[in-house]
Image (cartoon, rainbow, N blue to C red):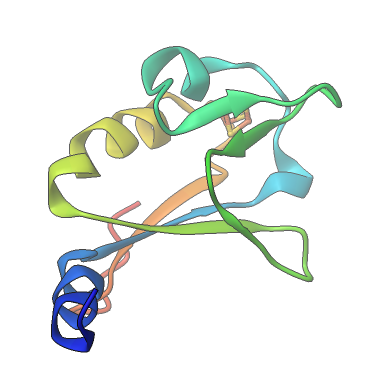
Length: 95
Ligand code: SF4
């Protein structure tokens, strides 16, 4: 892949999804609503599929605009509001 293509792919990832995993109660709603992005782990909490794990035990993943709706639905379904989405271009915290 050329550097230019890589840059284009990165800039296509317009949103950042974050999971406050320490406060996840493992209800599985996110995995039911958005199974391509959310999965249940054997410790009873959910994980973002393919995410980066942070030192503070949160998880994060950059996503493209076409995958926003599915992740927004997952965030909306979370009863304890531990799924957050930020617009990386504007810095707006959507949820
Ligand atoms: S919906 Fe929220 S509390 Fe339930 S498993 Fe997903 S992140 Fe955890």
